[in-house]
Length: 386
Image (cartoon, rainbow, N blue to C red; front, side):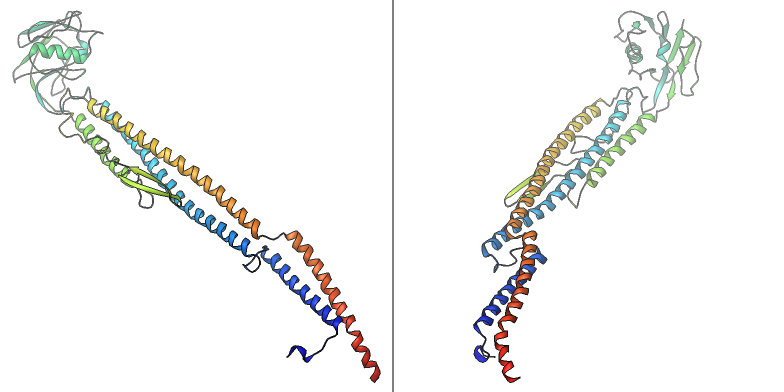
């Protein structure tokens, strides 16, 4: 329909225009109340709309980086739990190594084992004609008859060493003296106390003076059992180190984890070496711990070094974790700040828009009434035809 097809009075046209304007404002106010935003599109306010979009985009990017940081935290925590487990295993291995000394040798030998704890001052031991007299003097160091020190000053192992030195054989284990030699060697106990006993292959205890003929002494299984336990722990160290991963990333292996903080800001968490027992400077027991004089001192020293390495790795991971936590807090605060800024540019004041709605509804009612009144002049023409 053409604009000029219907003619309105000036009053009606003015009222109509005002009513149309009121409806437009009413529609805008309703949209603001329903969406909660004063700027819903670039047509409302181009400057504020695009500025808010930019702020929200950056907030969204930072939120995405926070997900990566959360994964990095979980990866570090998995590695830390692995280090805790490895520390426990190393403690168990050290306890095993410390218990080696004092155990009988793994290999069988020919001779007689004597319980040295019963030897007292004045006792005499004759081994193949070599007379050894117990006394509170200096230790015997030659392969001849002499006096050796006993009692609280020397340990059983040192007594064993003195007897072995006089006899010309290897020293025995702690608590026992091994008088080793060829088959047929004899050991004579003279003037001894009742608790000076021989521990032969049959386990018969000699509680009186007399002569014992050397025989084959069976090997002990204690050292072999400890070796097996120690080597098993080495295998468990490797297994635990391999299992301490999160989403395929294992910081207990030689690897690098790159954490994105936003833009070009990153953190590289690098572990140059792994934590298998060989990486920690440890080794399985092969031919060691067989002899009566073998100890676990070498292993205990190596384990102490390995524990120091794990503590250093744990400290490095802790420092990296502190950095990531700080960046997480910063990112959270920054996202909140960006979103607050964007909302300040686009959000509507619900109180103001509610008041506007009431006023516009009133204006709409008044406009409708005014339009009705302005049409009465035209309606009066109808009375001429009545």
